[in-house]
Length: 250
Image (cartoon, rainbow, N blue to C red; front, side, top):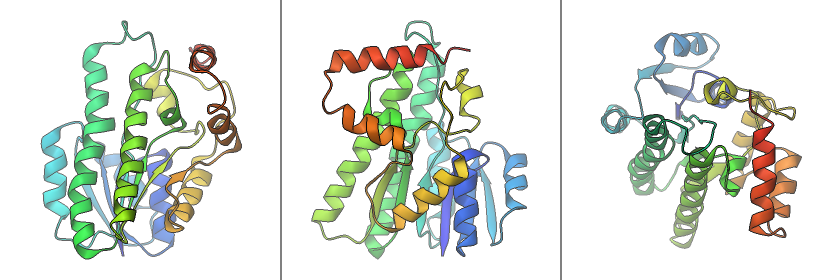
């Protein structure tokens, strides 16, 4: 058994690697930071291959696939991504485009390429790490929220297509509450509520993935927001999200 995990140097990606390794999966870890991947490798119990790649670059996505397509990948975890905080007109365009390339294009490319292989074998799991942001519009993190909406809705659509086709390949999305990871520093924000532990999220995500859940929501807060969003008007939700984001300002 083998799993490929992107963004595997810290937080959810690292901890999913730990969970799957304990379950006997050999691993392929992918990120830009070779040194951090080497540190993660020391904590893993199974065989580990490290591939250094910048998945915000399209050519690196295709290179990653070409390097691994002949291996028997059973689980693909698309975890790599980052966010940016601020008014839409103030965030540098280049940073946003880089975010779109990593959060959207890389997930799209890798899901498409590996899904074709999984379908030929009629087996495999794809876990796309979205976010609680995937359910909402996100004033002050507009582009980030939009990327996670894309990941969530794309994943749900692929799931339904596969289900109707009778495929045994399972595609799912992880949408947790805020998680205590390095995301805060990257996005230049601070959480105003206590974040979930990334290991708790990783264990829950792997468990529900193998139970073939399509949308995986760790944390009671997000479950409540997910239900509440169905009953509140859009304008009210936008105001609520804005106020929540504003309190994150560091």
